Image: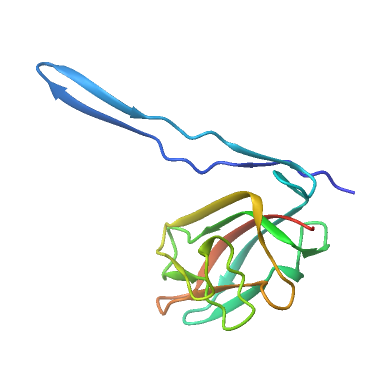
Length: 166
């Protein structure tokens, strides 16, 4: 049995400086707090960690089955019941745009909120979302996360999923 402890860092910070009357006035936007998920399956906990760098040829797509197909670092098939955090990165060196969501059937809605909703990631873009409660994954009817590559060229994108098995 494994024990999983997760930390999600998704934050924006900024320092805005303006010279006024011979002095600098500074406006600081602080970092947001980290979100910690403990080991388990209830609120604020997770027991599945999946990470992969995946390759998609130009003008192709794949639907990732979050319940019963992907395998973790230990060779175990993951069977997510709730996704607690997800990160998808289209690297800066990418030659194409990725569109996330809107699988033809059995769509995992998750943070997208609907079966036809999508997020577009240009080269260098990253999407991170977290829910302590988790977004429901329903095996066979709501478990496919579609990733579509545009026509620009092959893409090696990065995917991380933290989930709970029940």
